[in-house]
Length: 394
Length: 157
Image 1 (cartoon, rainbow over the protein chains, first blue to last red):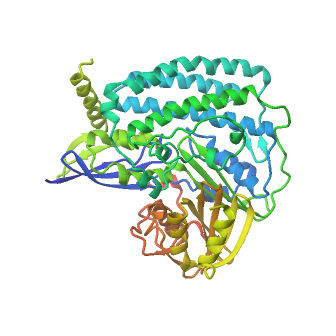
Image 2 (cartoon, each protein chain N blue to C red):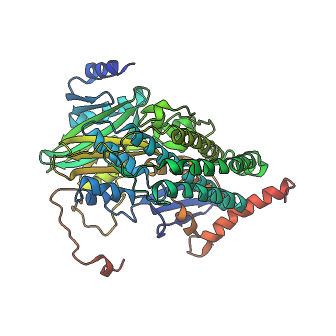
């Protein structure tokens, strides 16, 4: 059978990491995949060497538009690891609150987009409506819906006002019943079972081999979470469960993210209810020569920062590694052997930045256009529709 | 194994390859290595000790090109950082990505940003830099100077 090549990507102005996938297909089956990145390489590591330690916090906050807390969080922990030093307890609680709020809205964003790609726009509407409530919460706490600018080496920049807490708790509580309804609806839906179970399986062995991170590894039965393995801030004093499933398919990745949202709500509420009194910033005067490593669990997995100081007010080396850098190569293991109509959801399942999947185009070897991005999403939706019909659902 | 047992085990097995050990804190251990030893020491830590590969950091230092390989032993909450120092004129090191898939991409990145040659790398293509980037220009070297003085808006990108 003749082979066709499907180029996917690379540019989309909204993307955090533009990627270029080359899928080689035989008929409907994908037989080969190649990934290229770097189309929007901004040289943050080099830029950071020209900024003071304080300014770099805001530079790294701009790396990602969705999980804008994870990079400053890992960065300030890397700077603090140079000494090493402890930040005040109240600041640790506030950091935890911001990080968990971000995890909730990031997972809801993923759930909504996954629904959208599958032709379940109801899931998309519900998930994003709930996400709005969390963004409102973040605005009350930090003043911004995103890019919170809360972190600084030695503590946090902004306190949480006691009079805000009851309103925030009420808002968080208000989304829980709807989220439970959404969870049950998604997990019990026979069409979603048929559509997602057994699709794009990342085996436990491959997850270890690729050093996959976050929900991508936890869905494959690898119990890996920096919050448990190397607890930072107040995570070791809190009661919460790590969600681990065994199958490694797209369905399990969705399950992990949905259930984790509930754990995050639990942590968020506990921290808000038990916020200790005290200072919020230890006030670092100067940073000695040395090197520090900060790694934290972002919504997509471990974010890793390495900072080396020579005693001046600038880092001489600042290494940044986002979780998607480790998760992207797992496509080699998950997508081969699957069909084109499942490609969109498999590529989306590790929760990269999405827009690349909307720029697909399928051409045959003479260069005639067979499918473009919209047609591929339509193909994915049509598969869901036909499954629904077969199961007697409208 | 406990933390101390792991460190002793590494010392016993690879004593000849380990140049120095620096225990910065309970969670962080730095280990200087001979460059050619990274192939087997890295593989032992990944496969036998069951560590996770975090990433590798390359730095252009006054002494030469330095690579730090970060591994995490999750059960022990210990991060092992293997440090190798390469000659700036001819930075060559055996590839770890040859045997461990997780190291594949970062070696490609170090290859183009710092000009390190990874001997035996299965896929030595560029990862981040564009195809029209000139050969032999490495942006993370300290002596890097801007090679393209046209403004970005006039480059016709």
